[in-house]
Length: 90
Image 1: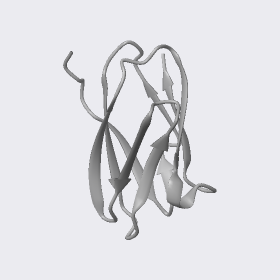
Image 2: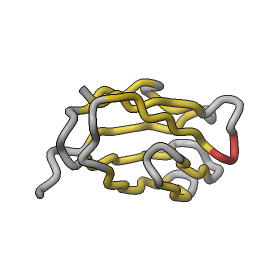
Image 3: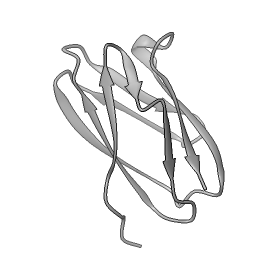
Image 4: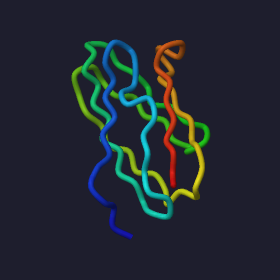
C-alpha cells in the first residue's frame, strides 16, 4: 500500500508542533519529523510501536499504520515533560 503525502511534525524548543496531528484512518501514514533544535530528540510511541532518534537540525521519516480510528500518543524521550503529542486517526 503506497503512503500518501507526508504529514509533518516539527520539534522546536523541545516541543512537537502540532501537538495534535489529524490523519486519515485505514491508510499507511508517512511522518516527516523535522528537528529544528540543535540537540537530538527521540520520537517515542508505545501506542504506535515506534521509536527513532532524530539528530539536531535534521529530518527523519517514520511510517505508521494503517491506523484504526483513535488517538495515539507520542512523546520526546529526551524532553518528556515538554515534548508531548497525539495522532488522531479518523
